Length: 469
Image (cartoon, rainbow, N blue to C red; front, side, top):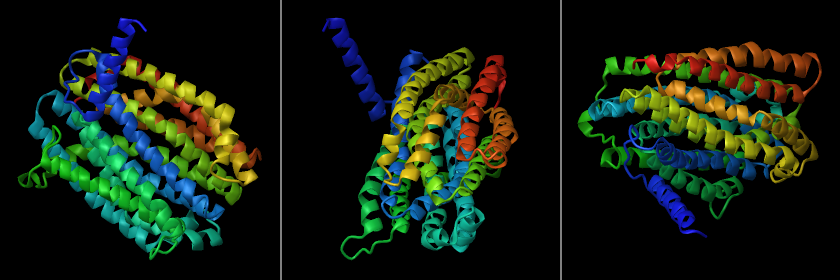
């Protein structure tokens, strides 16, 4: 090994260590590649932690019953509406805080963070009431069979009733990301996931005085894990291991700022409500083909999420860089950051697509011994993987719009690609033309490719550089 190669590897390892430890950086100057690396590494690891959450649950729940897996799928479909609100608000939070940090106005960034948390608490309480009172009705509305509803409503009640842990986890991590403190979000999720991995088998299968709760146990473990992460996040905000440090005197409602946050976030909420409601309707279509097909699809989606999350991490890095550099009046640096992040994301997703296409049946067999579950899940995984490189650029560029505060453009893109194209295409092919689940799988892939094409075209036009927030 040459001295130059050894030095280069040492430099990369040092950068990786600095990124994970959260060494403070000014991302509005210096090497863009280094900035992308320093932000993307903890964000990728953070998103991997979130996807591990999903995979661990489904591994254990798949050992309970097919109905249990299907219950998780139906509940997660409804929970995605909560994600839509949380992620939409988090986009607004990231854009506003990144812009204020780029302007070096930390006081305003701190005030924004407090109001974001207030909004999240109020919304989550309303959702909890519905989830606690009507879990059976929710599963029935989603097309669940009577036996599934009776077996799984406890899981639905706990997950939706404890949605505040999801809401605040997303929002506070968005605060950290906007400030450029991505490693803080990463470490809270590492702790959260460790707890979930330990508690899942205990509450699902029972241990000592703790009875076997089945699928309901997965909900208990997940809620405890996420709740612990939220407590740590809040502690960090008050202790001050971040650019954003909150004091008791900051805990005041500021309606004008709340209105501004909601205004910026509405586009983000809208785009994810459109996207996630599309997933809900796709799950409804899939439920027409029975619990085994639904279970295979649910497992495949969890595997897909496992690799989409790192790509989402790179996308979030692009959003932070866009927000901070626009705040520092450097739009060209913001644009270059997006192209670099998109290229890295495409390399990663391209590699993963090959793995999924070749090894899909093997991957599904790790989660279920049922041949029909494996067959349908593998087919879903293979078809969706064909569009992975397009997903990479689509995700990064859409997040770049959001990071700039231009949340309306992705909303229009999602409306056209999901509601006007994806849902009618899925229903027509899967139900009317009797192609079956394959019609839904192709609808997912084609819609995401379309999103990438439209996003690239609009990004090159450059209107996002002029957005004021």
